[in-house]
Length: 149
Image (cartoon, rainbow, N blue to C red):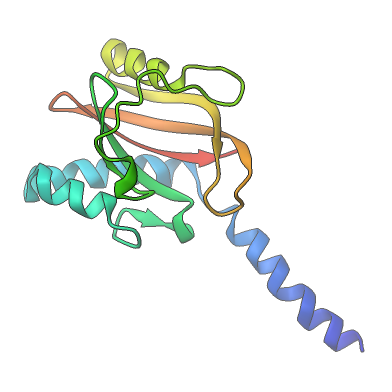
């Protein structure tokens, strides 16, 4: 019986540990990789690959993905799928009322890169969770990716 219980517990433990492996360094590296891909393959190819669910910029079962906005808040590419592309998110608010896209735009315009916090629905757990995203500007576009805290 104990072996059976251990067999049931082990996969759950591994799953919870795997959910914790996303680091700020991996997140930053993914953004830089997306920018490098855009530089070598072109923006259109990068936007297509970023938006492709399961593509090279879609990691950890969809929990880590890249997004790209223009400086007005319009989504140009998004790892959660094509339904977000073309939508201006400048006035979007998180569940606490924080205008997180305006904060993202201000950070991009003032510093060109950095981290910012907000609440967002985790695509894996389907729960609203605290999130922090790293963004970096390249050719007047905001490339970013975020991790759940």
